[in-house]
Image (cartoon, rainbow, N blue to C red; front, side, top):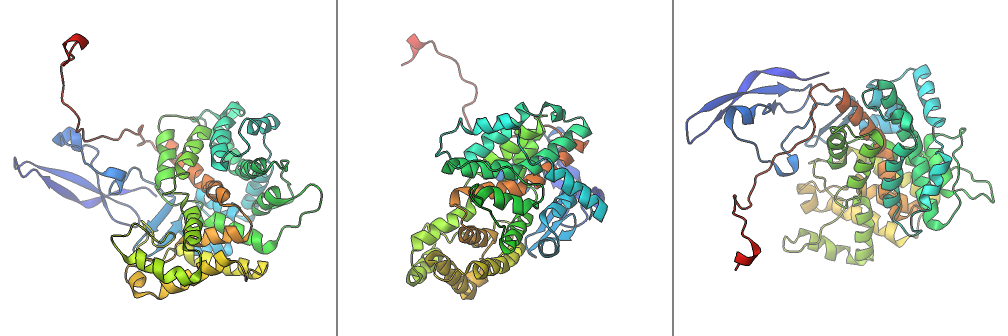
Length: 436
């Protein structure tokens, strides 16, 4: 469903000259209208200035919609809460890529296709050994995903729909294997090959934690928790990493390079590293009796301390993903019998106090998805260095869907932001002997 021109225009007036211009207004299916400024420079000689592009629509998209004021997140029109409870990750992947709920036959075909592409090229395994053993798993992810283009030459032609289809399948299928290998390499443990009899989430947990010396049994509660986490992180509209994938792809770069660029962007602590920052904050607080001290610091405008995992740049209401994660955290804690982990007990107490404190309620600083995902990962035995890796694994389908949409969009141009230049005007070059 593409945009349409609204029945009105926006009048822009230059107060200095009195000149006026009529700018078309575009409407989506839901959400605010947007002012079409594509011809602004040609008509007026001016650009807009919007650091971070927070007020600029860079594309039109059918995939994901967020209403931050209402606390809504829709994948192809389906509420994230409904998908997290009723669907699974691969069905969600199908919805994001193809736009509709699959029939049973379509879903079975899609599952088989993903399942039978989970193995990596054997030569690629030696690529891991080029990294230092103590390398951060995200550094390995960026390198290995980028290197896929050196192994799969049959899916690099972005103008060929079949190539795009094959590359998309490979990226979604192989990301859990790449991620699990990064973790095991950091521990000096042998790589584990995926199994075709396991689901997507089961396979990841199996490749992460199994031991070749004994049988590994996948816990169904932890599998469901992992599946929900993947669904909740699958896409999030035009965020920093998705925009990075799109702008890299706009140059015609191959899909593996584009997704590697997205992973590199996600690595930033302001984006994918937020759940890791939550645990760092909890460790800084230390004990439950110090919570009031840090709550007071969070309220102090002159104190740089901030409660990580509370509030969201987009959501001005309760993050809809956080409600699901809250319940998932309870299920995981109960299954694992977590009753005496000081950090997890601290997190639960902090959550309780913040939800009841008038300051946080008034400013709508509710616990977000990063707050809960971090403590769930900790309970499951996943190290903090892997938190952002799991985020990347989940978000791959969103990046792939957004990349495909961009390639197929006839209005898409190579990304070329403008700037407000504040440097020197033209200067004369002086020979070195004449410089004072």
